Length: 204
Length: 160
Image (tube, rainbow over all chains, first blue to last red; front, side):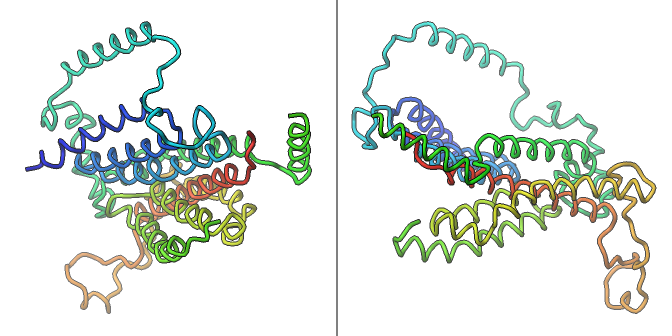
C-alpha cells in the first residue's frame, strides 16, 4: 500500500534531478531545485524523520529557493540573456563532448552502488545504527529528562549540548561572514557603488 | 513590492499561521518533532514572505536590521549563558541538572486535584528548563541570520 506513495515520490525525485541538470533556463532550474527539496522532505517524512523533513522543507524548499531567486534577480535570467522559457532551453548542446567527465561520473556511481552492497537492509533491527550508541541511551532518556518524550531533542540539546553549542556558533560565524562580504556598510559605500555603475553605463 | 491584491490578502492571512507554527515548533520541540533550528527558519520565512510581498521598507519597520543583527549574537549568548549559569551554580558547563529548583515541589493543597502520587512540579525540571533555554537561543540566532542574509541579498541593485 505504501508503494503507491513511495514509488511516485522516488520517481519524481529522479525526474526532477535529471530536469535540473538538463534545463538551461536558470529561473526554471531554481524552481526545480525547490520542487526537488520539497519531494525530499516528503520522502524524509515517510522515513519517520519529521525533524529532518521540517528542516528540508523550510531551508531547502523555502529559504534557499528565495535566496537563489534573489541572486537571479541581480543577474541575467538565462544563459542567453533573455528570461523566456523555450523548447531550446532543453535542446541546446553543450560546447564540448564531455567524455572524461562522463567516465569519472560513471566510475564513481558504480563504486557507490558497489558500496551499498555492504550496507544493512533497510529497517534491519541488527543494523549498527540500531545498536550503537547503546540502546539503553534511548531507554534511559525519558527518566534522565524527567519525562520529556522526544529523544532527538534530548540528545541534541542535553546529552550532546556541547556539539549543538558548536553548531550554533558555526551558524553565527557563517552569518557574520556573509554579512561582512555582502552588506553595504555605510551610505557612502552605497553612493560609491552607484557612482561606479553610472560610470560603467556611460562607457557602454 | 507586489500590488496584486490576491497575493497581498492571502499573504496577510497566512503570515499569522506561519508565525504560530514557528512558535509551536520552537516551544513544543521537546515533546514533538522540531526545535530551535527548524523554528528559526520557519519564523524567518514568515518575515521574508512579508518582505517579498509588501516590500523591504515595510519589513525594515517590523524587523529593523539594527535589532536583528544584534539578535544573531544574542541567541549564542543565551546558549552559552545557560552553560555558564550551570557552572556558576556549581556544575559542569551545560549540566542542566544544576538548574533544578526544588522550591515548588509538593504543594500540598494542589496535590488533591492532581492525579498520581508523585510530587508535582509546577515549574519545568532542570533538564527541561535547560533544553528550553538553549533551543530558544538557537531559534533566535537562526531567525536573525536567515533574515539578515535575506536583507543582504534583497538590498542590492541589479548589476548586469
